[in-house]
Structures are given as structure tokens and as C-alpha cells.
Amino acid sequence: MADIAFNDPLGLLIIAAALLLGGILKGATGAGMPIIAVPVIAAVYDVRLAVIILVIPNCLTNLWQAFKYRDEELDRSFTLSLALSGAIGAGIGTFFLVWVPLSLLSLSMVCVVIIYIAMRLLKPAFHVSLPWARKTAWIAGATGGILQGSLGISAPAAVTFLNAVKLPRPTFIFTASVFFATMCLTQFPVQLHYGLVTWNIVILGFLSLVPLLAGLPVGEWIGKRMSPIIFDRVILSMLAVLAIKQIWNVLV
Picture (cartoon, rainbow, N blue to C red):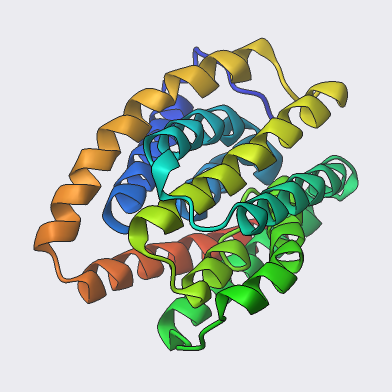
């Protein structure tokens, strides 16, 4: 696994740009920061480094959002089931992050990104009732957790599931934030145990909050003024280019 050196200005600039873009996406849509930040960082370094760098900013921003929207919880048992199963899945996924070869991790990340693009383009309008969501939350949570722990991207499972439940936006933000924050609290100690976390990465994790938080209001501004369809297509096109680059890096 590559490490981050603070005397690598180009690498730091690319990471900052990835987090800024991720923050813009999160500000515009309410979710999805890793879906763009992970592929950008992985295209320059590798998937492992991308996943590890994002744990601290992901955890802190989602803890803040969970606290901000704490009065919007809809169903305690549903939230806990999703979050706890996600935490267990994230722990399992981190084992994959450690032991699976980087080339296979890269191709897996590309597959997940392609699935995400396809789901966004198809936009299935299926609906899951809350009683049924309570029964199946652990499946979505565990699946999203494994994806988050191993590839840093849980959106194809978790966000799709929460969208299908048709939660009000504030409740969606609270539930998703608790889910993401809980997974991070599992990821970090497991990564620490396997020696994946360095002091440079810890420092960078805290510094990365700057571009991430800077992107949030920009995303909110864009979300209010740009057509959601156009914005969505721009993001998906960028992800498609990054996926092609990752395939090229692995196969060539």
C-alpha cells in the first residue's frame, strides 16, 4: 500500500480536489461523498489508501450530521438494526481490505461504481414499506458495511435501500449519518490493528475536513440552481472516466 508524504504537493492537491468534489456532491444530494472521493484518490494512489484516508472525515462529518438531525429519528429499532449490522459488515469488509490483492480490490471498486452508475441511470421506483424495511435492514446494513469496509463505497446497497424506504429528507440524513458513523467506528480500530493507519494518514484525515466542509455549501448552492438531471449526468460521466482509468491501470 502506498503512503502519503507531505512533500508530495501534487498528491495532496488531488486528495483535496477529491474531497472538495465529494463535499459538493454531498451538499447537493445529501449523500455520496465516498462514491466520488474514493475513485479519484484510488486512481492516483490505490484503493486501500483511499478507504483509510476517508475514515476520519467520514466519521466526524456524519457524527455531526447525526447530532444535528437527532430529533428526526423515525424508528429506533430500524436505525439500530441498520447501524449495528453495518458495523459488523464494515469489520468483515476491512479484513478483505487487508488480505485481498490490490488489483482485485481495484476491479471490485470499478464494478461497484458501474453498478452505482447503472442504478442511477435506471432509477428504479420500487418502494419498501417501513415494516418490511425493519425486517430487511440487517441485510442492507451488512451488505453496505462489507462494501464500505473493503472498498469505501456503500451507496449501491445502503443509499439505494434508504431511498426505497422513502424517508423524509431530514430522517434520511439522520439514519444514513448514524449508519456511516457507526461503520467508521468499527473500521478505524480494525485498520489500526493491522497497521494500516500511519500518523501521516491521521493528520491528513483531520486536514481533509477543510476541503470537504468547503464543498458542502458549494453543493447546496449548485443543488438549488442547476438542474438535478444535468448535475447527476456530470457526476456519473466523471465516475465513468475514473472507472475506465482504473481498468486501464489494472490491465495494462
